[in-house]
Structures are given as C-alpha cells and as structure tokens.
Length: 218
Image 1: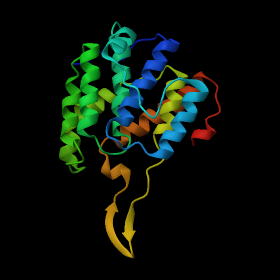
Image 2 (image 1 turned 90 degrees about the horizontal axis):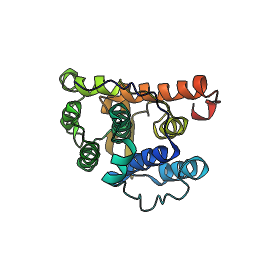
Image 3 (image 1 turned 45 degrees about the horizontal axis):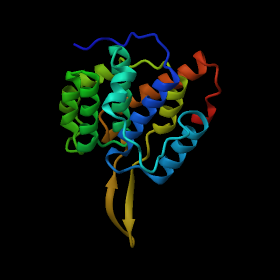
Image 4 (image 1 turned 90 degrees about the vertical axis):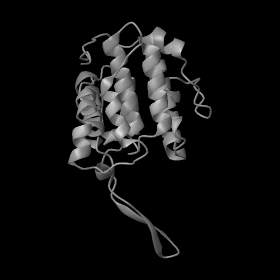
C-alpha cells in the first residue's frame, strides 16, 4: 500500500523547475512531442517557470537532482510521480520509453510503486479498453486519484497539456480512401477519467485557492 499524498508544503522555485523539467522529460520520451504542443508549453515556461530550459534538447533531469528535490518527502515524491504518469498517458498511449523514464524516476526517489506495474498492461496500446483491462488497472487508478495539486505553476502546466475535452473520433483519409480510424481518446485510454479528474483539480485549485481566471483553459 502506498502512502497517501498528505504533504502540505508548497514547492520552492527550485522544486517547481525540477518538477516541470521532469514532466517535459516524460513528454519528450516517446518522440511524439508535436510542434504545437512544444510551442504552447515553451511559451508558458518562458513566461512563468524555467526560462533557461531548452525545449529542443529536453534537458534530462538527473537522478541526483530528483533525489535532492523530492527524495526526503515521500508524499511529495509520489505526487510528482503521479503527474509524470498523467503526462505519459495524455496522448492515450503508454510507451516503453515512457515506462523506462518513470522507472528511472522511481529509482532516483527510492520508491517502489506497486500500482505502476499494472500500467504495463497498456504498453504501446496493446490492450482493449474493456472491463477486464479496467479491473487490471484498478491499483493505478486508485493511486492516481490520490493526487493533490498544491502549486499554481504545475497546475497551469497540466491544464495546458491535458485536452479540455475528449477529441472526437475521426477517419484519416488519403486520396479519398480511409487509411485509419482513430477512436475517441476516452475510449482509447482506459485511464481517461483520471486525466479529466487531474485537470478538474488543477482548474479548481487555480480558481478557488489562487483566485485566477480559468477561462483561458476552458
């Protein structure tokens, strides 16, 4: 059983920078970092977070940096890992490269998260979103639902990264012929409800705790 996320400490600027840098490592891990996503996130980083961070290289967070920033606070470290998992799931596909990066984070933080083992059932999209898959994913779903948002900059980042609504299903055509059908993300991703919950908690935190106007994210 994992420890509940009960840390009440706000992040220091250094911790926030490492947090965002780690999430970017996950976003870059599978090579599917679209130019539009990169431009959007880059603008947010330049304005508010880590202006010196080079998005072109997606500078790697070292294990020593992670240990120094979060290693002494298990609830904080688990919250960081939860957001990293959410970023890995944001495009609907959990890849081998994302899993390897998350395992590296766990080693650096000295954590063994049993719930993460169930994510391997979804590696590279080789699964069906059905009742059996959902049962297998129950441990990681419960673990992800324990996430608390306590930093405005992290909340803004997540609101921009996670789509505000489930993308419509669509057909990709070439020369008038359908070559692939893409289902709605909510059907493709069995953990979509957890992503929606994270985005909602981020919006609620910004509106109620920080008094911010959240209409730009809606």
